Image (tube, rainbow, N blue to C red; front, side):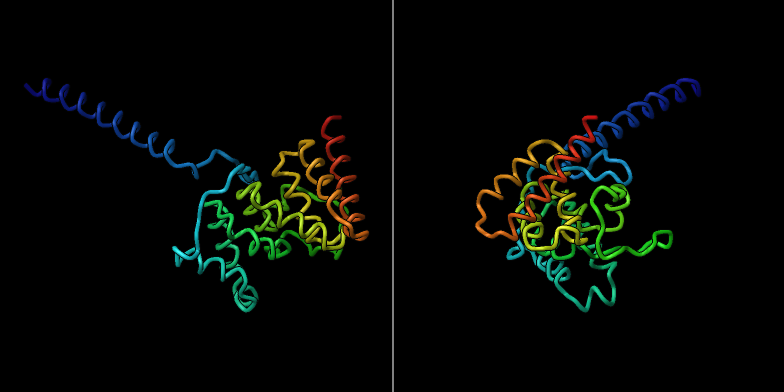
Length: 216
């Protein structure tokens, strides 16, 4: 009798485990925000999900937090948290506010302070995503963030931290493909400002060089 009960309980346990595993798989498949990226490897998003600050007070609060100068000075971690959340939900509406913070650096004891200007080729790409959380958030948002990144590249000195970070993020959204060059060249044809054209030319040259290094 006890042996029958033991066998019955074992069968029930087996099917319960199978059922729980299936449910867990269903949750992962049905949730587009659960990814398989590794540490320091932000995933690219082609299309941003919808989010509307007018209908969602929490979204409105997160976006306003990114524009709160006093908040950044007192508690930058709250600003980084807001970027992370808005990036995870791929909130295109938040792209301008996140881009404002593209040079906001997360301090790490093991990393020395940056110089005012750095050559693109000298950057450690992996550490950049950790040091500048806005870059990862904009990469998560994907192509809807491109206009904000382009705006920074056009209006900031080419060797500034802001422009450098914007260019690297733009290149990464295009997965370092020739599309990145085409996008910048298209922008160059639409500008009548000499200074903007020169900055775009620098960005194009650096992107081509990066593509060339990848191919070799």
